[in-house]
Image (tube, rainbow, N blue to C red; front, top):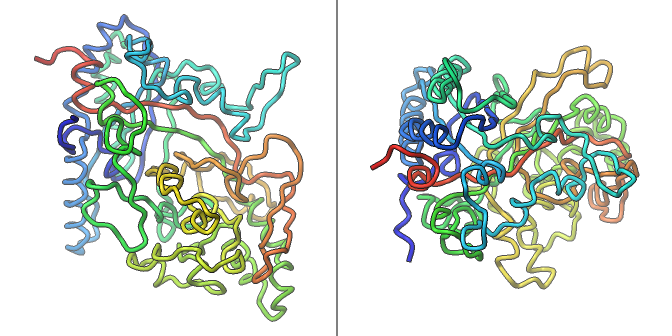
Length: 456
């Protein structure tokens, strides 16, 4: 029987999530001998932000907010995760008795690129080469160090400190493959992704871990998130206990093009209400594609007009399902209904509750890239690289559903009250994958016992 679950044993971005105004992802390749690398990981371990540390940091942040002084608490957190290549170099995940048992992780995201709908080229031999950034396509990434904090200077100092632990001031044990920086958006857009929608509202609660569960919030077994816990259906090696898989995707967002599409297709909204102003019709169309207004208010509860008060009310903003709604209020194809069908599974006669709960997992997205420029907005064309660093849910929808070929995409039910209406989304996508990788985030005991040396 596994030991009692303990937040001291897990890395804090898995739960409860590193507090962040900015976050740096440092992707690395092991270049020294493994003994030297494990010594350096041993030096890193005391600096890892555990679940307990992050929980305490979040309590302190809440106290500062309640004080009303308007300042930010200086805080940073470091976590580390390893790719399949990194585990193999460490002598882990190599045989039947030691394997994590996850075929997707073993095969790598590159082999899933076509299934995920990423753009690319099919070669004469039948192989598929995704149009990824070279660093992700190279498969040279052995791991990633995540550093989050209250501002860029805090995180930059933490990155410098981490690099010194790996010998960057002399002879490093790792080389930098790629560094990506993400930042929350400024001002009132804090918490919103680049399309303008509030992000991360519908997170699942973890049974026996989350102290408070909001009305309507789905609870998942610990084993959906943590290896070796109740609900984990696979046999795992002992070192995997309380570890967690991390799926990283870099998703570019073509904001001017998305905004222009909404503006050019408001007729599907105004056909049923020709008195609705153009700007309101545009907002309503966007809300029906996503399933929520930009404020985060669900259209299931606010079908024709935004309700910011509802959006901010945690007792209400997730307290709904789709029972009795055959797609008239919230389209079946809307982003939130695709990624979390709620009562639709039961309505369709799928009585197994794990069909839904095993599909949901915590998401840790943060935007990257600059705000949309005036020139981009005026020209309806993206020239700057911006988007979301995201742990995604699979499945086609009008927002994040990638389409590997150039055929037109369509969405039914975009018109208010008309489930049979069809909206041609065209072949052009507003979210484009730049690549990614699967990682395993070990527990603190595993980091000490299997991934490092120097511990008694």
